[in-house]
Image 1 (cartoon, helix red, strand yellow):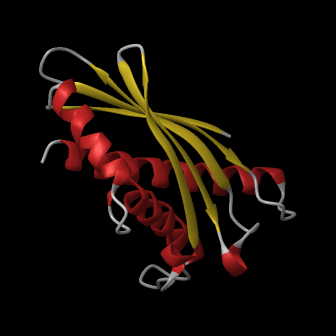
Image 2 (cartoon, helix red, strand yellow; image 1 turned 30 degrees about the vertical axis):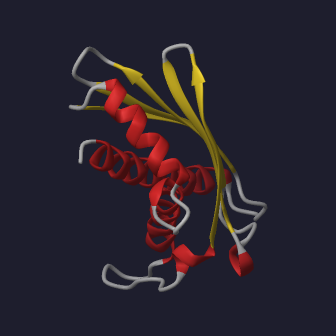
Image 3 (tube, one colour; image 1 turned 180 degrees about the horizontal axis):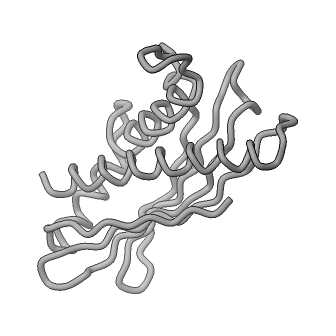
Length: 155
């Protein structure tokens, strides 16, 4: 399943580019890796919740995130992301391969785009149900991550 989402933030490209570099290299579990882990973990928690007020504690700790970049390409900056469930959840939830792209929208604003592909898990679900679950997970994860990145770039 392919996913694409984008946001435009009120910060110029030079400032957004510098901030992206900082958050991409943050090694303390924060930064982009932490935002990615949290976004994926939140989506997994939603999928594994039973009832409207339940939760799945520790789900975000079962997410493995890998980043590569930022890489300068023309007038953009790109970071490649790979997310997957780890530990006992490995193979039960979809993995995501995506690129997060920053580009100048105009002199004062920056466009953040996330293009990705979710790989279906290796479990036997009926096709319609599997597509629905993947779509929900993809939308929730991408929305959460883009909002976190946008908020950080405009701080």
